[in-house]
Image (tube, rainbow, N blue to C red; front, side, top):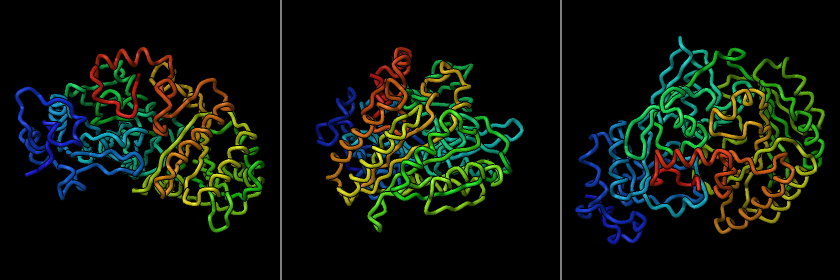
Length: 486
């Protein structure tokens, strides 16, 4: 018998956030509350149970980790509907997760339950119609490898372990953005559970307003259980030219000047990211550039030569299958769980060399002053020409004009360093905004810290329509933890 009480908040101080109990309902355990309404295959556990770790959804970062009071792993959509209905009826807050890559400021105070979507892990590929349908428990790797094996491909994020649907409903950027646009641009339809526990479909022809909203602000409107995407024939037989350069600190300006030459003129097949990091062995900052070209080495050579002219101390060229590519990224640390890692982000429309130089100098000083800080600062360059072909009005994601996506992964072992890291990185974000090329902050929600606000994530222009839809589909704010629209 489980011991964690849910319905009577007063019984357990840690559960006060659940609010008042439902009329006529006696205090009960999480098992008693849900078990009779779901199928036997659904797993349920209190945070104090021995099996809790196998039921709760995995989490990438220890930063702002929720204090889950319990977890449920539904086996079917019908189970998930019941879980949502019962939770809402009993004022029990919840967050549904898959890969656990959505940490946001303030989630550390969350004391509700986790809904682990890991059982919805099917991938169905229709090669004849160029479609793939994935469940809410599917990781990007499942999609990448499944399609590769049948000669197809799709634009995804740059790693293998985040949840495919979770990445999508925040917009979905990655190495293939230049060729195909955002993940939401190839999304055809979804099945989702609403705040009423109803199962609905959304597409361009069915619940089209809802379909607009979930393509960029999906966390605010329900739990997507299944998504169908358009897919593409493999480029270059599924092979990629991948080049890694390492530059000493003294070469930073030359490198930044090289990067600037791609502003407004980046080929669709070329993506690259620049990673500022600190080498503790040499006690110096360095910059790693990873260049990816979706074609043979011969086609990529002019771009390789361009970066080679900036004077790297290390250069390596490999030609590899797409499925191996996602292991090579410097941001693949999103699969390394359990560390304290926060993130800050901003979008740019231009490369301002002096601004990058100042940021590099500030990062170096911070590394030296804080030996336990092991974070990185990343500038991701993807051509936006394909992204801009989708009208801005078609999806809620507003920032299609971004050319450079800045992301920090702030890793540190000493938790007491957190406030200092946040202050420093927020300051860097403010500084970089002044030369971003945009009048207002353009923030990619999937990379967000959580303090930027709805206008920075979705644009001020989209907020009236978003809020109206919120009042229709989720008037009691069941969804949207860490992503408020107000």
